[in-house]
Image (cartoon, rainbow, N blue to C red):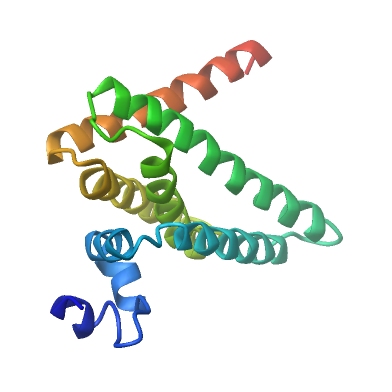
Length: 175
């Protein structure tokens, strides 16, 4: 086992530590890819989405807690799926050799899963969004075999596509 993984990100039994999840995404991506267990990031996203919905629901005044929690869960899942699809197209646009959904989905799942744990806090958006997209870009670099510039370009393209999509939806609604 990699000596860097024993130091904090993982223990002898092969589990990824909290320190690595929060502070060392590149080690986590490499470790899980080496073990062929990138699908574990999807389980992490699922747990984070449910916890996010529960915590967001607790912020609702009165009887709207279940509604706000449910909407938060579907919003988090929907944005993760949409970001995966747009990220996949962005990787293709920057010429990534490994531009497959099997590469993009774990990157987005990890980025969303880690940041959803604190994004329910009002005002946390300004901290969690840059962190989330940085983690996703790191995944594009580590798993997609991209240079730092191409990974950055893929993240920027994904963000531009998301903003354009929602701006178009708002324009259609007259907002």
